[in-house]
Structures are given as C-alpha cells and as structure tokens.
Image 1 (cartoon, rainbow, N blue to C red):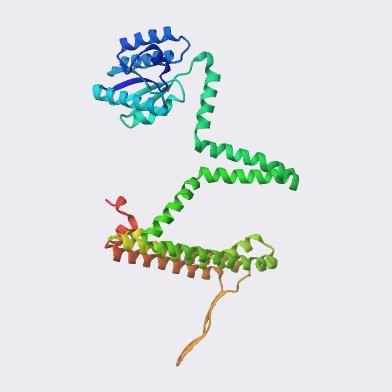
Image 2 (cartoon, one colour):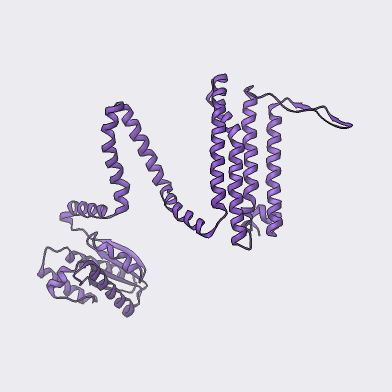
Length: 386
C-alpha cells in the first residue's frame, strides 16, 4: 500500500466512553465510527479529526494512489500506557498493510507527541492538524501556548531572557538612567540573539564533553590548546600596551588598530601554530593515514601571520610610524655586507607576502610528501579533477 491515513487520539477518552477498541481500519468502519463517537459526545473534536482523515483519504484516492484510512487511540490509564497502546496499534497496521508512508491527522498539540512514535516505525509524509473553525483563535492560542510552555528549550530561550530583562531594567534605570538601561539591555539581547542564531550555544554545550574525551583519551591537543590560549592572551596584551603610544602620537584610531595588529599577530600566529601542531600530533597517534589538511595547518598559520603583519607594517610605514625597512651591515671575516634600505613602503609588504607564500608552498610540498599525493591533487582537490 502506498499511503495510510491515520487519525490519532492520544488521550483516547471518547473511545473508552464509547467502548471502542482501536485500530479501526477501512473507510466504511471509520464512517460508522464517526457516527458512534458523534452520538456519544457531539462536542468532541475527534469527530472533526475523523472526518478530516476521510477527506484526505478521498483526495489521495482521486489522484490514483492506493490508500486506506484508520483510527488509533491510546487505551492506557497513563501517558506511558497510552503511548505504548498507540505503538502497538501502529505496529499492527504496518504489519497488516505495509504502507510506504503515513499521513497523521491530529486535533491537538498533545496528540503531536506521538509523531516520533510513528516515525520510528514508518515514514511520516505529513501531519494534518485539525482545529474547529468556531473556536479557531481560542483553541490555536491555547494549544500553541501549552506546547510552548511544555518545551523546556523554548522556555529557556524566551522566558528566561524576558524575565532577566524585566528584573535588571528597573535596577539599571535607578543606577544609571533610562538611556543607559536601554543601551545595556539592547546590547545584551543582541548578543544573546547572535549567540543562539549562530549556534554558538550548541558548540559551547559540546565543549565539556570534548574536553572530557580529550582528557580520558590522552590527546596531545588538550595541552597545546591551553598553551595556545596563553599565547593568544600574551598577543592581545602585547598589542594592547603599544596602542596608547601610537594613539597619543598620531591621534588616529586606525593607526592604533594597525599597531595592535602588528605587535599581536606574531603571538597569535604562534598560538595557532601550537594549536594546529597539537591537532596534527593527535591525528598521527590516532590514524595511520594523515589528511593533508592537518599537515597544512601549521604552515598556513605561519603564512597568514606573515601576510597580516606585512599589511599592518605597510600602513604604519605609510603613516610615518615606522622607518623604511633596512638590513644592518654585516661583517664576516673578509666578507662584508654594507646593508640596504628599501625606501618604498611596498617593499616591506612585498617581502612579507613573498615569505608568506613561500611558507605556504613549503606546507603544500610537505603535505604532498607525507600523504603521497601529487601537488596537482593537493591544490586542485580530488573532487575537481577529471
């Protein structure tokens, strides 16, 4: 059978009152069921749910697809008992009719809790939610609110920020004024939205598990990550202590930013180098075959650091913060080098770029040597060849 349309009532109260056992299968049987339930309780929304199931079945049959309709209800005295009764009924329907897919017809958010039960046994193509038209607004609002309050993740994501806002806003207004309160609340809410929208919360949730696995598995990277974090903090501090002097001299925020970058980049590049090297050691210990991406990481970190530092030095030299790039005189016995000074600021930039590109090429060559790939495969990639 192609499609089975199933009307599900998780609570099953109306079925118990009418003394009806489910599953009830077949269009004629469901039509009789509508009459019997309607006479028992004309106000129950399950009547509309069954009628919707019959309508969906008719529409599918008119399209020339094989279909059947069934009604299923929970028969237990508890939620667990009802769910298990529904699971048994679905198993019986699947074993008897072997449907390719199921369309569920429900009348409440409570019934939607059975969707995972059905999905674990057969593919669910659609979930049709029936709301009585006369009570559409009230019932929809009620069930949406009930579903919202029953979802722990939604409560934490919405109610907690609103509650904290309502608590902190009057405190900040009292201490710093209305403008400061609006600015602080807006900034915090914006940061929270970015935190949730970019999925940072999911990454943060995985950090404890990853750290625990790293400790238990004896990974080298757990140590190198700590060292890399310390080097990154040193880099930020090294750049920050040079910014006041540059800003006092030039009175330019851009020059201050370039000064911070110039003095912090070596430490940040070293931090990335240490972290990537630790990750590379982990791959060496764990896998016999090394990926070229891990082999390229340390060289890439150094190359990027060289290029970024070259650009920051270029801007600082243009602003007369740095003197032109020069090489000091060197004497080694009979050989003497008088030194050289490169006047154009672009000369310093070119040297850094050339060195960065050279380091990157060395990384590619090293990766090809270790992973036994050709340079064409390394640069173009296996998916682009042909």
